[in-house]
Length: 297
Image (cartoon, rainbow, N blue to C red; front, side):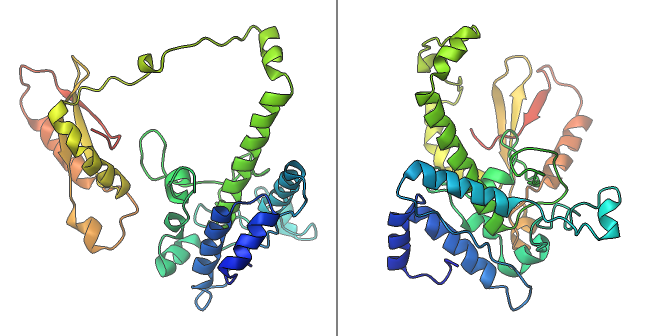
């Protein structure tokens, strides 16, 4: 339980394990946030104990093994008749608002304690667990994160992870990426790729950059649009179907989004109404625009 651990103790644990001090801080924040609602709802704590093996590689492997064990969905007892029914193998595999491990009611938890996922920040990217796992990376729209039977593989389930378990899942994926990176560098995988006919070609980074038609006078507004994207304020682009460039950019502030005190989902009602009005307008000489949402200029 890191939630009540003093800062000096966290520093000592970080020096003895392969988890960084920042990662332990984020885990402590998640545990504290979950503990704040214990008077209203029973929330189990994640009993993850980082390995103190002196060899960092072996410590990481032990942590990965322990994380897989803790993140496996809870199964029903083999003596339960419901286990042998279709879809009844897992106890909490009901919907996307329930943790598949401890059965926590995520909807009730978020309403009582706020969006805890947004409070847990990745120390490298600066993004929250909400941004990483509950938003579509292409459209930016909010969508549910669903767990898998074998944690990182297997069939997708109907349930999700509570904030603590999702943070452990996030650490697990980072540890596995470190393992793969070391394997790429140390086991001669480049030679294996060459045998498969795969080679690398040096390409100037400038040629890969996305073409941007933003006028220089509008570049200064880039921080403003970043703030809109972070706060889930709808930004709609109307691109010219003939040239592919953005002709119009519209920002919609919906008072219902702020008066409700919940700004965790996109509100497209105003956009849909605007689009409907656009469809009723008589055709103009210019080609009709197409709509896209990416949150940038």
